[in-house]
Length: 263
Image 1: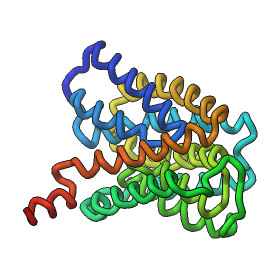
Image 2: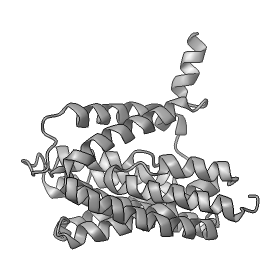
Image 3: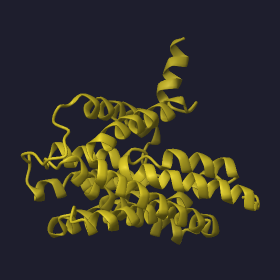
Image 4: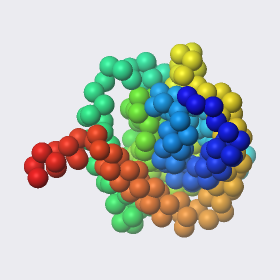
């Protein structure tokens, strides 16, 4: 990694503030910060690992704000978070063994489905609805799968947590967002600890970005509490769509490779 000047660090801090704001409401902040870190000169492993620092702090900041407003049911949520943490560690451990092309082909399609679901479903409201599965069944499935994915790859993990809380546990949008931030924090923390142990984190950059992500998450979480589905729903649709587009535009994406082979 080349030495970063103060001007580049200032740019990364500003990007991280906006990413923390977006992450607190709809997730997807890594869509902004990881490319910014790559453009700053970090290699891919350093960019992903360093991004986890601001991701952890931003998610913790948002979780604190939502928790203070009584929007997190800690009796069940801490168990979900523990599972997400362990799954994030497992995902980071397996990052070199699982086929990335499969994820790179599958994730954009799932994000597009999520965007359409939140855009069109009449069930997406601030009020809670009837749960479709027990908390135990949910805890043994969604945090396991999404936490593992967050550790191994990451883009869209918040959208997947949100979808699970809304469709399977019947949470209203604001309450689902609050619990999503807690689980995001847990799975990010698990993978960050593993990345830190390998020496991949560029701590000076990560800590500066974490500070501004904390502030951005405070603004975003307070806005989400105030406006509810009026801001969460459209922003979630936009961010999910943008993440899908960003992944599909990658020249290495299997969908692009398949189209090039056809045409």
